[in-house]
Length: 194
Image (cartoon, rainbow, N blue to C red):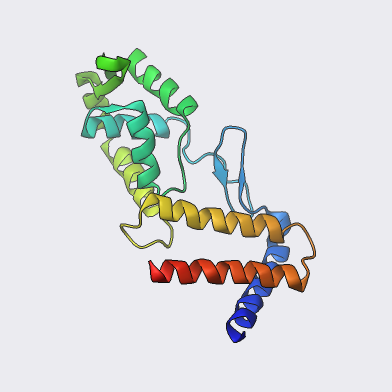
């Protein structure tokens, strides 16, 4: 029972902190699917051109399929950012159109993108910026320990989002708070046993 009261205490502290920051925002997604956190709208994860450079750097490491790029970026960002196909494929098309990438259609119709000599030259000229983008993606894992799998980080983010949404709806009575605390405690016990 004391564990539940302690959890309830932390939930109440969390609610008070949320009230202080409610007008500041929280976690939201814009129509393009980009995640925003905190008090000010942070905009897109990447500024204009940065995403193109990141994709170019990644296909410079090794040729990749579009879906593979989505998964690698999700992993590098620890699940906190996953580009949509509507962002990846137009970017790849742009890289092909500019001559920085080439596409090979494999069996089953899958397309594998690889860097061209022009793309290599562009990447060499912009190596510092590309390295900064790759470093940013690794540091975007937040407080998660290195090597934490993307699905685990995504699950933690989902829990935080669910708490923000439920607790941000206004006054929450003690019975609901106790049920929330019990659910979190049960999840913690299950994780500890696994």
